[in-house]
Image 1: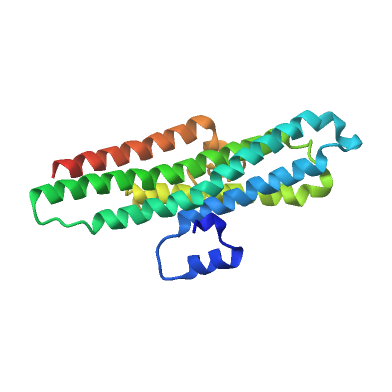
Image 2 (image 1 turned 60 degrees about the vertical axis):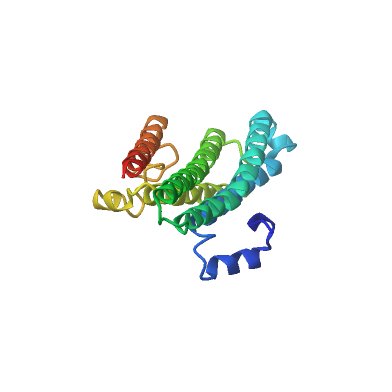
Length: 226
């Protein structure tokens, strides 16, 4: 059974178990899914109300974006866990002969790539939804202001959690900690943590993703030569 098909209680029990998957990556994807769902709910509470007729088109755009992003993030709950399981399986492959070692190295590199791709996708969808919320601020039904805030916080947490997974899967977690990326400071969301603020701009996000991918490719290249 897929993780996405479990009840909330059963999914929580899976997270609390001794198995490393599902873990933080799947949790980040689920939190992002909840943030997108909340954004969609607030859009629904605004659409069709005479008092907010001026933001009708904007809210329909938010609703459409939220629907697409929440389904994508839900799929990533399972994809992240599957990627980690594939890495564990690859690591358990025999390495007694040259052929076995080559096969094991190839399988591990492919699994590591998947372990980076899944959280990068979580970041992509979460940040896209955050930008959509930011662009619609002032147009939402004010009675649901707290729901908009919770949605944004969920999406921010999802992006930051996914970024941590990218770092650890590319060997960059220790160096990022040494350079002060802790607490409210995070690559995808900027030093201030505000939506689209400071280092959270598109160029900054693109640079951080490129650095992570380059670091992964370099490590993969070095391992393949061993």
